[in-house]
Image: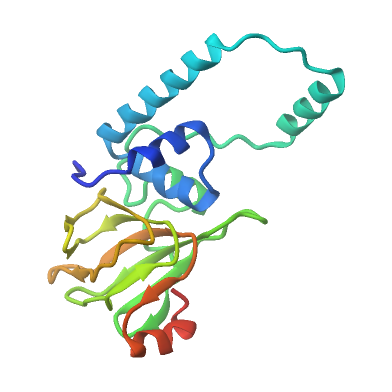
Amino acid sequence: MKPTHHLDYSTLLCLAAGTLDEAFTIVAASHVAVCATCRAAVRQAEAVGGGLLEQMSDAEVSEDCRSRTMAALDAVSPQPMAVRARPTQIPLPLARMMQVDDFNGITWKKKAPGVAMFDVKLPAGARGQLRLLRISAGRAMPEHGHGGEEITLVLRGAYRDHMGRFAPGDVADLDEDIEHKPVVEQDQDCICLVATERPTRFKTLAARLIQPFVGI
């Protein structure tokens, strides 16, 4: 697997800094786990951030601030970002979260002809939505834009749009200015991991009418 579509550099910087929302962190980390190019970029960003911290002058911290900070750190269950690929269908960051290694244990919910979905549960209070989307071979999604940021990682199969061909490991890091019409290739269903900030903006009236029932 050698991805040809990568995360935007701003996303990589936010991932390295730990400032991405939970849903986007899982998708970005899952791509980084299988992409040597983005993995190197994250390491570079971490090195730059570490260098900047070393140049900062020391500041006095009150005992109250120190105590509250340490208490908050003790309450956190660390989730280290995986940086190595794993011989399973599902990248390690997502596999850890879902406690599965392949797609056989997933209970898909049919949302429309040729479209099924699985909502990935996020921690309470997490922002955004994270879901697995399975689209049948040969099916075209309605042309649409995005209400905010969206990152889509292809896990199986492939689709094409005006930006090119997206195969396993490829990621579409999109903002609200991008509109596209993905078409799944004929030989296999396409399974994607999708993080969204806000609901999709469909262009056709028919798609908008069924959107509340589909949940995309």
